[in-house]
Image (cartoon, rainbow, N blue to C red):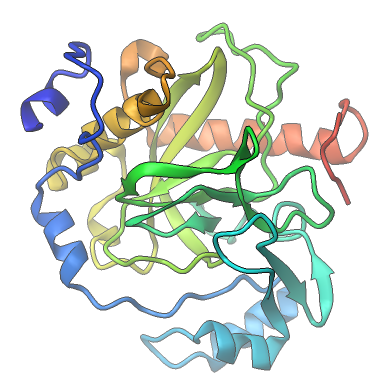
Length: 306
């Protein structure tokens, strides 16, 4: 398996056992560290300022405590593992959209809010339902069946709020248009984060994945509160401190649809993991595309907007 990961352009055979994390020290530590409670984003500036002042030094509020104090909460409707399941978001008792109402920006350069849809080491393919009112988190459905990965994903996976990959705009390098979704983020930190958690993450790099002819950026990031975050500032640091992680992400997303008979996914830019500067550029461009979308300057199709 390690040999396969080291040779991303030599695809030997269809397989279902490829969904294994690279055997690095960092990933071994991920299984040993205690999960810390998730922190949810607070939309109002005043609430965020007060939260920082009130939070215990070195600690985070649990989701329940934060909900009680700032009335930011999630509500589960339906049963997990069924088509009726929805995770809905509220702020001060008012329903909000995690895509449109949670701020992308944290006020710190290179650090953005990421919404976790799929906790690491889980299989259900959960996502923000961009065509439903208020955009709750739901399990994806394909051909009438709930969608699960064929093996667990070994990183926290989610999206950046207030971003959108425009399907009407062709990227000059890849010659592909956007996939009509918010920008995806792969969070490589040590803790398994809760579904629905909003975490400030340091952006480290990005892969230009091509899925069925569409451009589907995969931003690589690490939670700001992760113990390793201070040592990682760009994609080269990930390669040095966490050898095998970038290649593992590239190959996991290349192969993950093949058990369903789908072709391998490809990558633009010679399959390279691009540096932080490019990732920040992608986030900025897709944020501008989102602003035009919600501002009515771009055709929305079936997307639900505020």
